[in-house]
Length: 297
Image 1 (spheres, rainbow, N blue to C red):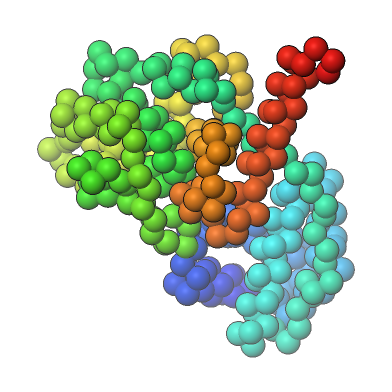
Image 2: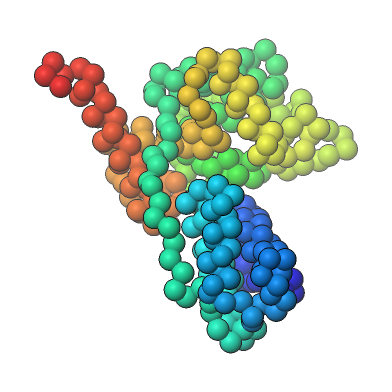
């Protein structure tokens, strides 16, 4: 069964061109699934897998306290795997056909208010090259709404300050061009003038735009540590995620009258329904304002 999993992962990487994080997620889910089949259900060949085995596997995950979102993700992974095996003639049936995904509660992304964003963006200090770099990263995130994985994936040639745009590679290796505002441009220019050179190591000649203390490309975990530290210094009590500035970017654009399609394009969403969740946030915020300030609310 491990050989079939390797073939499927190769298919996702080479033919589907999925993002690294998505690939990792598929592999983790399916390793868990195959481990369960082998060690609990005594299934030694993938063609022996039946619908009841998948049902039991999902029950096993539920007993472990997994959320409906996690269950739905596992179902999607298992379904994609079995469909691939059927198409590849590695299996003569698809046991996942009539497996239904659990109903999920739609949770709205957490966003910062304009005041909180301003507080966070002014948290980095220009006293050293770390603060200059951190300021540039936060300003770039809020100005463009790019994902953290896209931010740390930027190379020197992807930032065009004269033309006022950033080029990034999103999910599925899709390229998009996003405009840069003056504030973000000034912060990035400052990083290029006084910050980035301080990180460059003689041993590591990295083309990455944002570098860590060793002169290598900054990691997602490294950025997350920086964000949590700055949020604490800024006194922000809300629970932050690496996507908080991305969510805030989209919400604030829509609150100020931006076109939904334009926001969809800047965020790199394939389906506009993904972008529409931000319209629910703006409606929720309007209700909060109404109830707070209307005399007869």
